[in-house]
Length: 447
Image 1 (cartoon, helix red, strand yellow):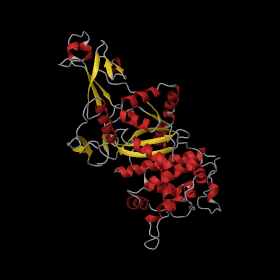
Image 2 (tube, one colour):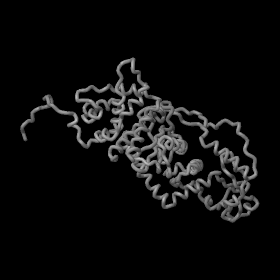
Image 3 (cartoon, rainbow, N blue to C red):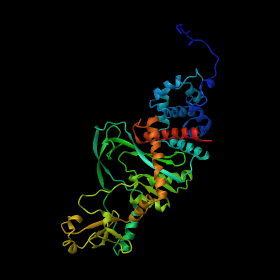
Image 4 (cartoon, rainbow, N blue to C red):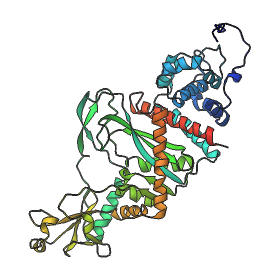
Protein backbone atom coordinates (compact mmCIF):
# COMPACT_ATOMS: atom_id res chain seq x y z
CA UNK A 1 0.00 0.00 0.00
CA UNK A 2 2.87 2.36 0.80
CA UNK A 3 4.80 1.61 -2.37
CA UNK A 4 4.77 4.22 -5.14
CA UNK A 5 2.98 3.16 -8.31
CA UNK A 6 5.13 3.36 -11.43
CA UNK A 7 4.24 6.18 -13.86
CA UNK A 8 2.80 4.66 -17.05
CA UNK A 9 1.47 7.72 -18.89
CA UNK A 10 4.31 7.66 -21.40
CA UNK A 11 4.36 3.93 -22.05
CA UNK A 12 3.23 2.63 -25.42
CA UNK A 13 0.13 0.46 -25.63
CA UNK A 14 -1.66 -1.24 -28.50
CA UNK A 15 -5.31 -0.38 -27.96
CA UNK A 16 -8.41 0.15 -30.09
CA UNK A 17 -10.42 3.31 -29.40
CA UNK A 18 -13.55 1.19 -29.74
CA UNK A 19 -12.48 -0.80 -26.67
CA UNK A 20 -12.22 2.37 -24.56
CA UNK A 21 -15.87 3.45 -25.04
CA UNK A 22 -18.34 1.73 -22.68
CA UNK A 23 -20.88 -0.46 -24.42
CA UNK A 24 -23.78 1.40 -22.81
CA UNK A 25 -22.53 4.93 -23.56
CA UNK A 26 -25.21 7.29 -24.90
CA UNK A 27 -23.19 8.15 -27.99
CA UNK A 28 -22.91 4.46 -28.90
CA UNK A 29 -26.70 4.15 -28.74
CA UNK A 30 -27.20 7.31 -30.79
CA UNK A 31 -24.73 6.13 -33.43
CA UNK A 32 -26.55 2.80 -33.66
CA UNK A 33 -30.06 4.27 -34.00
CA UNK A 34 -29.56 7.54 -35.92
CA UNK A 35 -28.66 7.72 -39.60
CA UNK A 36 -26.54 10.84 -40.23
CA UNK A 37 -25.92 10.15 -43.92
CA UNK A 38 -28.55 12.72 -44.96
CA UNK A 39 -26.38 15.63 -43.80
CA UNK A 40 -23.99 15.55 -46.78
CA UNK A 41 -26.82 15.75 -49.33
CA UNK A 42 -28.55 18.43 -47.28
CA UNK A 43 -25.62 20.85 -47.26
CA UNK A 44 -23.82 20.06 -50.53
CA UNK A 45 -25.15 23.22 -52.22
CA UNK A 46 -23.32 25.33 -49.62
CA UNK A 47 -19.92 24.01 -50.75
CA UNK A 48 -17.88 24.36 -53.92
CA UNK A 49 -16.55 21.02 -55.23
CA UNK A 50 -13.84 22.42 -57.52
CA UNK A 51 -12.42 25.48 -55.82
CA UNK A 52 -11.08 26.67 -52.47
CA UNK A 53 -9.39 24.91 -49.60
CA UNK A 54 -10.58 21.48 -48.38
CA UNK A 55 -13.63 22.00 -46.17
CA UNK A 56 -14.34 20.58 -42.76
CA UNK A 57 -16.47 17.46 -43.12
CA UNK A 58 -20.04 18.72 -42.54
CA UNK A 59 -21.14 15.51 -40.81
CA UNK A 60 -18.23 15.80 -38.37
CA UNK A 61 -19.07 19.46 -37.78
CA UNK A 62 -22.74 18.82 -36.99
CA UNK A 63 -21.84 15.82 -34.84
CA UNK A 64 -19.57 18.12 -32.83
CA UNK A 65 -22.46 20.55 -32.37
CA UNK A 66 -24.74 17.68 -31.33
CA UNK A 67 -22.23 16.65 -28.67
CA UNK A 68 -22.27 20.18 -27.31
CA UNK A 69 -26.05 20.28 -27.04
CA UNK A 70 -26.35 16.69 -25.79
CA UNK A 71 -24.05 17.35 -22.86
CA UNK A 72 -24.86 21.00 -22.21
CA UNK A 73 -21.53 22.46 -23.36
CA UNK A 74 -22.44 26.06 -24.19
CA UNK A 75 -19.01 27.25 -25.38
CA UNK A 76 -17.60 26.11 -28.73
CA UNK A 77 -14.07 26.56 -27.40
CA UNK A 78 -14.87 24.38 -24.40
CA UNK A 79 -16.46 21.83 -26.74
CA UNK A 80 -13.20 21.46 -28.69
CA UNK A 81 -11.18 21.21 -25.46
CA UNK A 82 -13.45 18.44 -24.17
CA UNK A 83 -13.42 16.57 -27.48
CA UNK A 84 -9.60 16.54 -27.43
CA UNK A 85 -9.51 14.47 -24.24
CA UNK A 86 -12.84 12.60 -24.31
CA UNK A 87 -12.44 9.21 -25.98
CA UNK A 88 -16.20 8.72 -26.46
CA UNK A 89 -16.49 12.04 -28.28
CA UNK A 90 -13.62 11.08 -30.60
CA UNK A 91 -15.20 7.69 -31.26
CA UNK A 92 -18.55 9.31 -32.14
CA UNK A 93 -16.79 11.71 -34.52
CA UNK A 94 -14.94 8.88 -36.24
CA UNK A 95 -11.53 10.17 -35.11
CA UNK A 96 -8.57 8.31 -33.67
CA UNK A 97 -6.67 9.17 -30.52
CA UNK A 98 -4.10 11.25 -32.41
CA UNK A 99 -6.33 12.79 -35.10
CA UNK A 100 -6.49 16.56 -35.05
CA UNK A 101 -9.73 18.31 -34.21
CA UNK A 102 -10.89 21.47 -36.04
CA UNK A 103 -10.31 24.81 -34.41
CA UNK A 104 -13.21 26.35 -32.49
CA UNK A 105 -13.21 29.31 -34.89
CA UNK A 106 -13.91 26.91 -37.77
CA UNK A 107 -17.16 25.90 -36.09
CA UNK A 108 -18.06 29.52 -35.42
CA UNK A 109 -17.30 30.75 -38.93
CA UNK A 110 -19.27 27.94 -40.56
CA UNK A 111 -22.23 28.83 -38.36
CA UNK A 112 -21.88 32.58 -38.99
CA UNK A 113 -20.98 32.60 -42.69
CA UNK A 114 -22.14 29.38 -44.30
CA UNK A 115 -25.33 28.35 -42.53
CA UNK A 116 -26.63 31.57 -40.97
CA UNK A 117 -30.12 32.62 -42.17
CA UNK A 118 -30.62 29.24 -43.87
CA UNK A 119 -33.10 26.39 -43.40
CA UNK A 120 -30.38 23.81 -42.72
CA UNK A 121 -31.04 23.52 -38.99
CA UNK A 122 -34.78 23.25 -39.57
CA UNK A 123 -34.22 20.55 -42.18
CA UNK A 124 -31.93 18.57 -39.87
CA UNK A 125 -34.54 18.79 -37.13
CA UNK A 126 -37.23 17.58 -39.56
CA UNK A 127 -35.12 14.63 -40.69
CA UNK A 128 -34.66 13.43 -37.11
CA UNK A 129 -38.43 13.71 -36.50
CA UNK A 130 -39.03 11.64 -39.66
CA UNK A 131 -36.62 8.98 -38.37
CA UNK A 132 -38.54 8.92 -35.09
CA UNK A 133 -41.76 8.42 -37.05
CA UNK A 134 -40.24 5.46 -38.91
CA UNK A 135 -39.43 3.89 -35.54
CA UNK A 136 -43.07 4.35 -34.40
CA UNK A 137 -42.16 6.87 -31.69
CA UNK A 138 -44.49 9.55 -33.09
CA UNK A 139 -48.21 9.28 -33.82
CA UNK A 140 -49.13 12.88 -34.63
CA UNK A 141 -52.63 12.43 -33.21
CA UNK A 142 -52.23 14.19 -29.84
CA UNK A 143 -49.93 17.19 -29.58
CA UNK A 144 -49.01 19.42 -26.64
CA UNK A 145 -47.73 22.96 -27.12
CA UNK A 146 -46.33 25.50 -24.70
CA UNK A 147 -43.73 28.26 -24.64
CA UNK A 148 -40.79 28.95 -22.38
CA UNK A 149 -38.57 31.99 -22.06
CA UNK A 150 -34.85 32.14 -22.78
CA UNK A 151 -32.97 35.09 -21.36
CA UNK A 152 -31.62 37.15 -24.23
CA UNK A 153 -27.93 37.99 -24.39
CA UNK A 154 -28.79 41.62 -23.57
CA UNK A 155 -28.75 43.99 -20.61
CA UNK A 156 -32.32 44.85 -19.58
CA UNK A 157 -31.26 48.37 -18.64
CA UNK A 158 -29.85 49.23 -22.08
CA UNK A 159 -32.84 50.06 -24.24
CA UNK A 160 -34.66 52.76 -26.16
CA UNK A 161 -38.37 53.48 -26.46
CA UNK A 162 -39.55 52.63 -29.95
CA UNK A 163 -42.93 52.90 -31.68
CA UNK A 164 -43.94 49.89 -33.79
CA UNK A 165 -47.00 49.05 -35.86
CA UNK A 166 -49.24 46.32 -34.52
CA UNK A 167 -49.07 43.45 -36.99
CA UNK A 168 -52.30 42.27 -38.58
CA UNK A 169 -52.85 38.68 -37.51
CA UNK A 170 -53.59 35.86 -39.96
CA UNK A 171 -57.12 35.33 -38.68
CA UNK A 172 -58.17 38.98 -39.15
CA UNK A 173 -59.62 38.47 -42.65
CA UNK A 174 -61.83 35.67 -41.34
CA UNK A 175 -62.84 37.87 -38.41
CA UNK A 176 -63.79 40.75 -40.73
CA UNK A 177 -66.04 38.42 -42.71
CA UNK A 178 -67.59 37.08 -39.49
CA UNK A 179 -68.27 40.63 -38.28
CA UNK A 180 -69.99 41.61 -41.54
CA UNK A 181 -72.07 38.44 -41.47
CA UNK A 182 -73.04 39.04 -37.84
CA UNK A 183 -74.06 42.64 -38.48
CA UNK A 184 -76.16 41.65 -41.50
CA UNK A 185 -77.93 38.96 -39.46
CA UNK A 186 -78.90 41.69 -36.97
CA UNK A 187 -80.14 44.02 -39.69
CA UNK A 188 -77.11 46.34 -39.64
CA UNK A 189 -74.87 47.48 -42.46
CA UNK A 190 -71.37 46.02 -42.82
CA UNK A 191 -68.64 48.26 -41.46
CA UNK A 192 -66.85 50.43 -43.99
CA UNK A 193 -63.23 49.60 -44.67
CA UNK A 194 -61.06 51.44 -42.21
CA UNK A 195 -58.77 54.07 -43.70
CA UNK A 196 -56.67 54.16 -40.56
CA UNK A 197 -53.22 52.62 -40.55
CA UNK A 198 -52.47 49.76 -38.22
CA UNK A 199 -52.28 51.14 -34.67
CA UNK A 200 -48.89 51.81 -33.12
CA UNK A 201 -47.64 50.96 -29.67
CA UNK A 202 -44.58 51.96 -27.72
CA UNK A 203 -42.18 49.22 -26.67
CA UNK A 204 -38.81 48.89 -25.02
CA UNK A 205 -36.23 47.84 -27.61
CA UNK A 206 -32.87 46.49 -26.57
CA UNK A 207 -29.86 48.30 -27.97
CA UNK A 208 -27.81 45.10 -27.59
CA UNK A 209 -30.20 42.65 -29.23
CA UNK A 210 -33.01 44.58 -30.95
CA UNK A 211 -34.80 41.40 -32.06
CA UNK A 212 -35.45 40.25 -28.49
CA UNK A 213 -38.58 41.43 -26.69
CA UNK A 214 -39.17 42.98 -23.27
CA UNK A 215 -41.30 40.44 -21.41
CA UNK A 216 -43.74 41.39 -18.68
CA UNK A 217 -45.73 38.39 -17.40
CA UNK A 218 -47.18 37.39 -14.07
CA UNK A 219 -44.75 35.33 -11.97
CA UNK A 220 -42.05 35.69 -14.66
CA UNK A 221 -38.86 37.76 -14.58
CA UNK A 222 -38.89 41.08 -16.39
CA UNK A 223 -36.33 41.81 -19.04
CA UNK A 224 -35.36 41.01 -22.61
CA UNK A 225 -36.21 37.44 -23.58
CA UNK A 226 -36.99 35.14 -26.45
CA UNK A 227 -39.88 32.68 -26.39
CA UNK A 228 -39.54 29.14 -27.71
CA UNK A 229 -42.93 27.79 -28.77
CA UNK A 230 -42.46 24.02 -28.68
CA UNK A 231 -44.80 21.19 -29.66
CA UNK A 232 -44.36 17.65 -28.32
CA UNK A 233 -46.00 14.42 -29.45
CA UNK A 234 -47.80 12.51 -26.71
CA UNK A 235 -46.36 9.04 -27.35
CA UNK A 236 -42.67 9.42 -26.47
CA UNK A 237 -42.19 13.16 -25.96
CA UNK A 238 -40.58 13.65 -29.35
CA UNK A 239 -40.42 17.38 -30.15
CA UNK A 240 -42.22 17.97 -33.45
CA UNK A 241 -41.98 21.74 -33.80
CA UNK A 242 -39.81 24.61 -32.57
CA UNK A 243 -40.53 28.26 -33.27
CA UNK A 244 -38.81 31.25 -31.66
CA UNK A 245 -40.36 34.69 -31.25
CA UNK A 246 -39.48 37.80 -29.29
CA UNK A 247 -40.44 37.69 -25.63
CA UNK A 248 -43.33 40.15 -26.05
CA UNK A 249 -45.31 38.01 -28.52
CA UNK A 250 -48.48 36.32 -27.25
CA UNK A 251 -48.41 32.52 -27.21
CA UNK A 252 -51.53 32.20 -29.39
CA UNK A 253 -50.19 34.35 -32.27
CA UNK A 254 -48.00 31.76 -34.10
CA UNK A 255 -49.87 28.64 -32.94
CA UNK A 256 -52.23 27.82 -35.82
CA UNK A 257 -49.62 28.50 -38.49
CA UNK A 258 -47.13 26.17 -36.76
CA UNK A 259 -49.82 23.51 -36.31
CA UNK A 260 -50.62 23.62 -40.03
CA UNK A 261 -46.91 23.39 -40.80
CA UNK A 262 -46.62 20.14 -38.85
CA UNK A 263 -49.69 18.65 -40.51
CA UNK A 264 -48.29 19.44 -43.94
CA UNK A 265 -44.63 18.52 -43.29
CA UNK A 266 -45.19 15.28 -41.39
CA UNK A 267 -48.66 14.37 -42.68
CA UNK A 268 -50.04 14.40 -39.12
CA UNK A 269 -53.71 13.62 -38.57
CA UNK A 270 -54.10 15.71 -35.43
CA UNK A 271 -57.13 14.75 -33.35
CA UNK A 272 -56.38 16.32 -29.95
CA UNK A 273 -54.27 19.18 -28.63
CA UNK A 274 -53.47 20.16 -25.05
CA UNK A 275 -52.67 23.78 -24.25
CA UNK A 276 -52.36 25.96 -21.19
CA UNK A 277 -54.61 28.91 -20.37
CA UNK A 278 -52.46 31.38 -22.30
CA UNK A 279 -53.82 29.98 -25.58
CA UNK A 280 -57.48 30.33 -24.57
CA UNK A 281 -58.58 32.97 -27.09
CA UNK A 282 -61.68 33.13 -29.28
CA UNK A 283 -59.69 33.16 -32.52
CA UNK A 284 -57.64 30.09 -31.60
CA UNK A 285 -60.68 28.15 -30.39
CA UNK A 286 -62.49 28.93 -33.66
CA UNK A 287 -59.43 27.92 -35.69
CA UNK A 288 -59.15 24.56 -33.93
CA UNK A 289 -62.87 23.86 -34.37
CA UNK A 290 -62.58 24.65 -38.08
CA UNK A 291 -59.79 22.06 -38.25
CA UNK A 292 -61.97 19.52 -36.43
CA UNK A 293 -59.49 19.20 -33.56
CA UNK A 294 -60.56 18.41 -30.00
CA UNK A 295 -58.81 21.06 -27.92
CA UNK A 296 -58.33 21.02 -24.16
CA UNK A 297 -57.09 24.23 -22.58
CA UNK A 298 -56.33 25.33 -19.06
CA UNK A 299 -58.64 27.65 -17.17
CA UNK A 300 -57.67 31.12 -16.07
CA UNK A 301 -60.00 32.84 -13.65
CA UNK A 302 -61.28 36.06 -15.26
CA UNK A 303 -60.54 39.39 -13.67
CA UNK A 304 -63.35 40.58 -11.42
CA UNK A 305 -64.03 43.81 -9.63
CA UNK A 306 -65.04 43.26 -6.01
CA UNK A 307 -68.63 44.14 -5.22
CA UNK A 308 -69.92 43.59 -8.77
CA UNK A 309 -71.77 40.67 -10.34
CA UNK A 310 -69.73 38.10 -12.24
CA UNK A 311 -70.32 37.96 -15.97
CA UNK A 312 -71.51 34.39 -15.61
CA UNK A 313 -74.44 35.67 -13.54
CA UNK A 314 -75.82 37.32 -16.68
CA UNK A 315 -77.53 34.42 -18.47
CA UNK A 316 -77.18 34.28 -22.24
CA UNK A 317 -80.17 33.11 -24.31
CA UNK A 318 -78.70 31.78 -27.55
CA UNK A 319 -82.09 31.31 -29.23
CA UNK A 320 -83.15 34.93 -28.78
CA UNK A 321 -79.60 36.34 -28.71
CA UNK A 322 -80.05 38.27 -25.48
CA UNK A 323 -78.91 38.34 -21.87
CA UNK A 324 -80.92 38.30 -18.65
CA UNK A 325 -79.46 40.19 -15.69
CA UNK A 326 -79.64 38.98 -12.05
CA UNK A 327 -82.62 41.29 -11.51
CA UNK A 328 -84.51 39.71 -14.41
CA UNK A 329 -84.15 42.52 -17.00
CA UNK A 330 -83.60 41.56 -20.65
CA UNK A 331 -80.38 43.04 -22.11
CA UNK A 332 -80.70 43.36 -25.89
CA UNK A 333 -78.23 43.40 -28.76
CA UNK A 334 -77.03 46.89 -29.76
CA UNK A 335 -74.18 46.56 -32.28
CA UNK A 336 -71.08 44.61 -33.34
CA UNK A 337 -67.78 46.45 -33.12
CA UNK A 338 -64.87 46.41 -35.55
CA UNK A 339 -62.93 44.33 -33.00
CA UNK A 340 -65.49 41.52 -33.28
CA UNK A 341 -67.48 42.07 -30.08
CA UNK A 342 -71.26 42.22 -29.88
CA UNK A 343 -72.49 44.86 -27.46
CA UNK A 344 -75.64 44.21 -25.45
CA UNK A 345 -77.16 47.13 -23.53
CA UNK A 346 -79.83 47.36 -20.85
CA UNK A 347 -82.79 49.77 -20.70
CA UNK A 348 -81.67 52.77 -18.59
CA UNK A 349 -85.23 53.55 -17.52
CA UNK A 350 -85.49 50.17 -15.81
CA UNK A 351 -81.92 50.20 -14.46
CA UNK A 352 -82.36 53.63 -12.85
CA UNK A 353 -84.83 52.19 -10.32
CA UNK A 354 -83.14 48.80 -9.86
CA UNK A 355 -82.05 48.06 -6.26
CA UNK A 356 -79.08 46.09 -7.63
CA UNK A 357 -77.72 48.90 -9.80
CA UNK A 358 -74.64 49.45 -7.59
CA UNK A 359 -73.60 45.82 -8.07
CA UNK A 360 -74.22 46.00 -11.80
CA UNK A 361 -72.81 49.24 -13.18
CA UNK A 362 -71.66 52.73 -12.22
CA UNK A 363 -72.39 54.09 -15.69
CA UNK A 364 -73.55 57.71 -15.55
CA UNK A 365 -76.41 56.93 -17.95
CA UNK A 366 -77.50 53.87 -15.92
CA UNK A 367 -76.73 51.54 -18.83
CA UNK A 368 -75.23 48.09 -18.36
CA UNK A 369 -73.14 46.90 -21.36
CA UNK A 370 -72.12 43.28 -21.88
CA UNK A 371 -69.74 42.25 -24.66
CA UNK A 372 -69.66 38.89 -26.41
CA UNK A 373 -67.22 37.92 -29.15
CA UNK A 374 -68.66 36.69 -32.45
CA UNK A 375 -66.66 33.48 -31.90
CA UNK A 376 -67.59 33.16 -28.23
CA UNK A 377 -69.58 29.99 -28.98
CA UNK A 378 -66.38 28.21 -30.03
CA UNK A 379 -64.65 29.38 -26.89
CA UNK A 380 -67.46 28.06 -24.67
CA UNK A 381 -67.46 24.67 -26.40
CA UNK A 382 -63.69 24.32 -26.05
CA UNK A 383 -63.96 25.27 -22.38
CA UNK A 384 -66.45 22.44 -21.86
CA UNK A 385 -63.89 19.93 -23.20
CA UNK A 386 -61.77 20.61 -20.13
CA UNK A 387 -64.56 19.31 -17.87
CA UNK A 388 -65.11 15.97 -19.63
CA UNK A 389 -63.42 12.72 -18.58
CA UNK A 390 -61.62 12.62 -21.93
CA UNK A 391 -60.46 16.22 -21.54
CA UNK A 392 -59.15 15.63 -18.02
CA UNK A 393 -57.04 12.70 -19.23
CA UNK A 394 -55.62 14.73 -22.12
CA UNK A 395 -54.80 17.78 -19.99
CA UNK A 396 -53.20 15.72 -17.23
CA UNK A 397 -50.59 14.56 -19.73
CA UNK A 398 -49.46 18.11 -20.52
CA UNK A 399 -47.14 18.36 -17.52
CA UNK A 400 -45.64 14.98 -18.43
CA UNK A 401 -44.94 15.92 -22.04
CA UNK A 402 -44.14 19.49 -23.07
CA UNK A 403 -43.39 20.77 -19.56
CA UNK A 404 -41.06 17.83 -18.91
CA UNK A 405 -39.39 18.44 -22.28
CA UNK A 406 -38.65 22.04 -21.31
CA UNK A 407 -37.39 21.01 -17.87
CA UNK A 408 -35.04 18.43 -19.40
CA UNK A 409 -33.72 21.00 -21.88
CA UNK A 410 -33.02 23.60 -19.21
CA UNK A 411 -31.50 21.20 -16.71
CA UNK A 412 -29.29 19.17 -19.04
CA UNK A 413 -28.85 20.95 -22.36
CA UNK A 414 -27.86 24.57 -21.61
CA UNK A 415 -31.25 25.95 -22.54
CA UNK A 416 -31.84 28.70 -19.97
CA UNK A 417 -29.97 31.42 -21.84
CA UNK A 418 -29.70 32.49 -25.46
CA UNK A 419 -26.14 31.79 -26.63
CA UNK A 420 -26.39 34.22 -29.51
CA UNK A 421 -27.99 37.51 -30.50
CA UNK A 422 -30.67 37.72 -33.16
CA UNK A 423 -33.84 35.67 -33.59
CA UNK A 424 -32.50 33.42 -36.36
CA UNK A 425 -29.45 32.45 -34.29
CA UNK A 426 -31.58 31.72 -31.22
CA UNK A 427 -33.90 29.68 -33.47
CA UNK A 428 -30.85 27.64 -34.50
CA UNK A 429 -29.93 27.05 -30.85
CA UNK A 430 -33.45 25.91 -29.96
CA UNK A 431 -33.67 23.62 -32.99
CA UNK A 432 -30.34 21.99 -32.15
CA UNK A 433 -31.33 21.48 -28.50
CA UNK A 434 -34.63 19.88 -29.56
CA UNK A 435 -32.80 17.73 -32.13
CA UNK A 436 -30.37 16.53 -29.46
CA UNK A 437 -33.27 15.66 -27.15
CA UNK A 438 -35.03 13.78 -29.96
CA UNK A 439 -31.87 11.81 -30.77
CA UNK A 440 -31.53 10.85 -27.13
CA UNK A 441 -35.16 9.68 -27.04
CA UNK A 442 -34.70 7.63 -30.20
CA UNK A 443 -31.49 6.07 -28.87
CA UNK A 444 -33.05 5.08 -25.55
CA UNK A 445 -36.57 4.11 -26.66
CA UNK A 446 -36.46 2.81 -30.23
CA UNK A 447 -36.57 -0.94 -30.71
